[in-house]
Image (cartoon, rainbow over all chains, first blue to last red; front, top):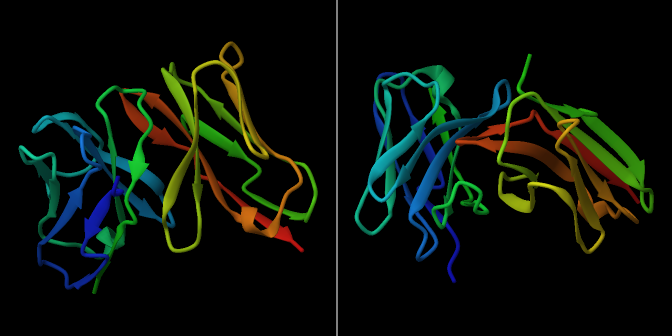
Length: 113
Length: 106
């Protein structure tokens, strides 16, 4: 089975722009979660989608949004980028149960200038 | 106070040494995960525990639900074990510890 894939792997944007990141889960997995990793805050949960519905959400401003398509692929959007949004954005997929093992993608490294 | 605390933050050891990384949490959980992150960012899930002990090769993970504590042990450590080890707990969502940076010197 192919692993979780994320595109693009690297991205450079300027303040005020918006960005869309994509995540393709492992085939058959219905849950996709997104995480932000920064040196200062470590790993933080952004949101989880299951069967096209947001199942859970972390403590991030409304500039961060996501969606999931019927094929379980997910996108994450950040609008009005700030310097502090520079981070590694990771997605992870799992079958669907809350205690199922999560499989992480390689991440998208976003730099905001 | 963080919901998930790890210790130590950094650990340097000689090849062959027995390694222990600790994780304490303060919330109710349905499962605890140990993750490994190598330079470059990729994260691999090592263990998921809800009770007892699990072993995979040279890695052993234990959890004490009553004490809200878990340990990750590495036996016969090797330089390729050098990575950041992250504890995470599931209570509707994943909440992460700050990680332990392990360096094994040949």
